[in-house]
Image (cartoon, rainbow, N blue to C red; front, side):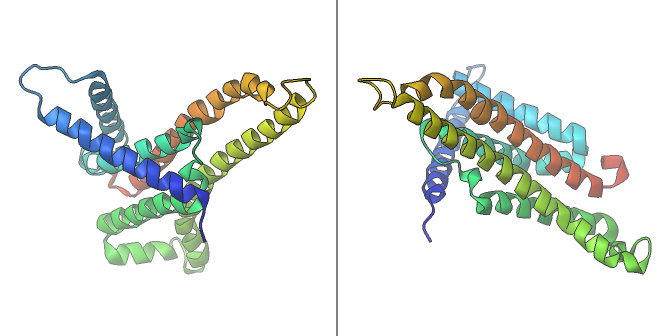
Length: 227
C-alpha cells in the first residue's frame, strides 16, 4: 500500500547520500592548510562533536565503534524532522522508519550485552534475580525497542497533526475576509512561529533525545570501565 512518506524517505535518503558523497569528495581534495567551504567545515564540526559526545558517554573503545552510527542516525532523523519546512511529509512520521532505527539500536544493545557477559551470561540475565522474573526481564529487554520507536514517532506525528489542524483553522478564518478570503493569509502569518518550534526546535530535540537514549541503552551493557 502506497504511503506519502515513502516519497519523502526516498528524497531525504538520496539528498543525504549525494550530500555525504560531495562533502567527502571535497574534503579528500583538500591539500595542506587549505580550508574547506562553510558547509564542509560545519559538517566536520558536527562529526567532531558527535564523536566526542559518544566517547565521553560510552568510553573510548565503544564510543569510537558507535560514533559513526550515532552520527548517521542523528543527521538522518534531524533532516527528516525538518523536511516539513520544504513541503515534504516527514519520513519519521512513518512508524516503519522509527521502528527500523530502534530495531538496529536494539540489536546493538543485545550484541554488546552478549559480548560483555558471554552468551551463557546473557541468557542467565533473564533469570536474575530469580527464575520467576523471566517474563518481566523479557519485557525489559523489549522496552527500549518500543520506547525509542514510539517516542520519536509520536512526537513527530503530534507536531504534524497540530500543524494540519492549524492550517485548517486559519483557512476557515481567512475565508471570512472579503476579496482575499480564498487565500489562507492568516496561516502565513501564524504558522511560521509554530514551524520554528515543531520543525526546528522540536526536530533537533527529538533527534538529540534519540541518540542520547541510544547511547544510554548501549552504554548500560558495556563493561563498567567503558561505561
